[in-house]
Length: 232
Ligand code: GRF
Image (cartoon, rainbow, N blue to C red; front, side, top):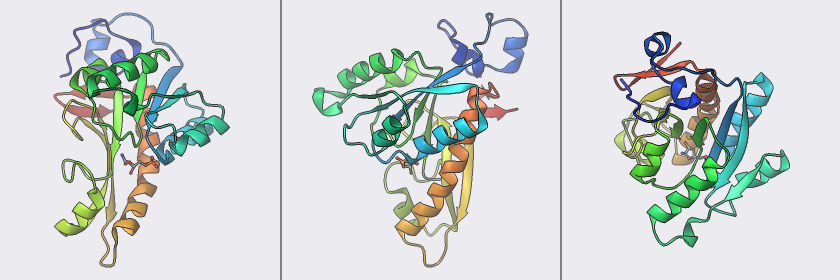
């Protein structure tokens, strides 16, 4: 069971086990509109999928900001052109990981997010940063975790000769590409697949499962019990 030993925010309450909430351990009212901050480093196609789906399905949530560690992240153009607030915190301006993460945290928290979404955010995060967003930060990884963590996942899959591959949405913990799994999508690995063809097939699925998982979160339908995500 996830234990929360700090003041419980709306978002944290969101992922508490149902029986705790029911029994009144957590009190207070739930805000109806959820606030999401999305972190990107590059193309931002997952950010775009989340934005478009949220709009089309009229989620009880809004994207408060898109934040990037790179001013040249392609996805920022989409965000700006669609009226989403953007911010850039260049990691190269900070001497170490701790100071960068501290600055990033200040920017993110200025938007008081219920949920932080890592969407191709290419930074290893410090433990204190991850702990600050425990239970309210999601990531998507292009493999069926726990297989093929780290980089070049499609190459890893081809080298291992697996017959299926895919993508995973998970809550972020201090261990890289690790954490309670919210959703997975599976694609076949074809005999003539290249890294690129496999990546494209997986990406199509990413754009399905990431918006779905974010929607479950903002609707308060996720809980974590004994390290496993339950969705109702
Ligand atoms: C995706 O494959 C995602 O799984 C991984 O990085 C890639 C980001 O793509 N974490 P995009 O920036 O969302 O287009």
